[in-house]
Length: 415
Image (tube, rainbow, N blue to C red; front, top):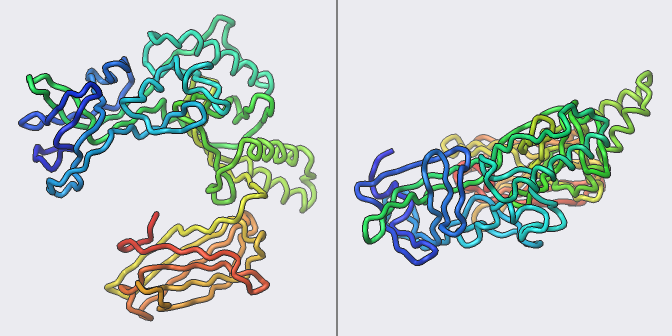
């Protein structure tokens, strides 16, 4: 990385105590991605990879990265949110105490009804004051889930997992105060996470009482740590946010279908295939010991019958030099709206229609989704297209869903 001023993240920063810092000359850059070995919520520092990084209160950030010296003053935020009470809020130097194990444990400041507490320390050592209670919480949680899921846990009665801690990712520059004291300031990136462990497979057991499920011998529970949260996505496209009740009821129903369906009949075979699909998923989170994965993101195809259908665009390409456009859209619940056709409209900056096309709907019998693949070449001056409108039309010839996307360069907003 070079040392020009435009490559720095900011022109000045202010610490929580009011000290003003400016970039060191000549510029000196740093980055970390490693275990958190210490954290001081009073000094607002996090230590990782042999470097002490200071989290400032605010910085005058460069508004652009092309050499423009214009700046904008902003509070420095982690790319992580924390939960305090029932409120999810940005994590900053002022609120970084929410990262501490003691605040994330049951009864701590950031515990709420949805997150019962931390099961793993944020530090890569056993030094934090919350470690003992976290280890006890881990043991109670995994033992109860193991019994409920019918998984035999083989560790001895006095065993506790090694607490590997969290990962600190940062990128920034060295700054100095008025007397030349140096500070590592993360003006280009600031992330705290526990891990990036992923499990892919089919759910083999579920236990409603402990809100846990299993993939083979791996016990999976939703992350109870308020510092990092948990989300469950479902629907055929894995884009619908699900509640815990919908998710676990869906798992229970699918497993029941596997047990009761007759594999010797066509209807039974179809039911088994559909249930197996619902039970196949990807889970991202962090391990605590070898047997427990705490899920921060679950991507499933469990369906929320009460959720509205979602229309999404997965591909959008504009080639103005060839007057060519390609669009691929999909809907996750076409049967719910009795989908018959798609209507694609291309609009100019004034909302005037440049081109309209109707496509027949084809529903995939396995995923029960429908896709529209639209393309045009040479029919219009594609440089005039500023908005794409996609309508889902039912068999009763009614527009059930109309969605629009703004063009951004050679694609659509959000892609």
